[in-house]
Length: 100
Image (cartoon, rainbow, N blue to C red; front, side):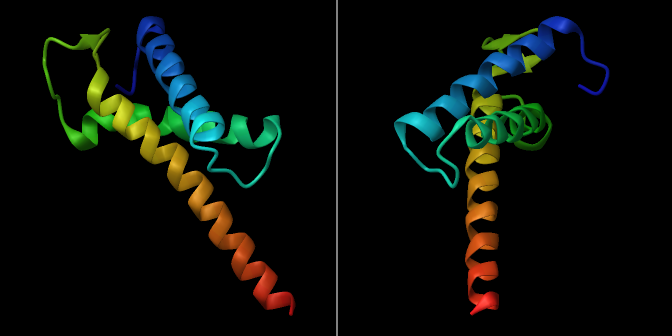
């Protein structure tokens, strides 16, 4: 997956968009309300989706597009989007306690 082709990049791009939209607008798990919070989740979701297959494995071999296994990529995208927000919230909490 390091030297991926454009189709693989585009597949991960769409998967991470779906996961970021779900986490930001459907679940409403966010630190920042605007587009910057959404874009942060999108980037973190792309990284998570990219790492999904190598870390989680190649599940459902028939469900892959351009060497991207869909189920692990979605799981990785959700984990990446969620973790980005969770880390940001934890850091904000620590910073607010350290200034008091």
